[in-house]
Figure (tube, rainbow, N blue to C red):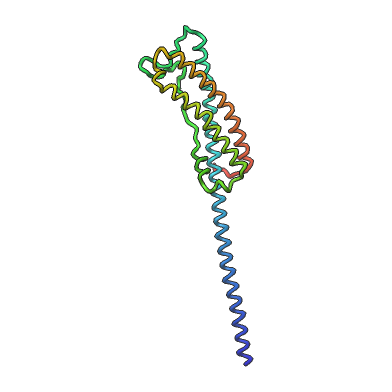
Length: 210
């Protein structure tokens, strides 16, 4: 009778131990899965922010290249409008853009927002500091409604049928002068905003792969 009682007690403690072991294993598995998910999420967040930083740096480099060239174009247009004797024809007789005022066209490269759009439309954006998201949102809005909008206006002027008419050339020159003046001012302001945003992102110490 005592032996039976002893075996029953032994089995009971063994059952308790095995149950606890199973429970511990399940909890450990859940913890590891959650940890791996969080680790993957952090890696994705770091990668997304790195891509945005690279995009901003590339855009900043592009705008820094635009600015001196657009200042030259603006100066050329202003000079043409100062003197009626200067031929202000923007287009040659064959309809091609004259290289006199814009020897390299309007722009030689474009700015981008693909990384920002990807970040904004993903679930990762909710894991990023709200202050950073607001800074980026304001910056890309400024980019879109500023230099990109003015660039499109300049292209619209150059593409319009009226601009090709000889009698409209001076008015076309005035419109372009005003647009490039706006463009230069926007570029100066945007460069400062890019620099401020990159400093703020750098302070967050997001990893960079070089």
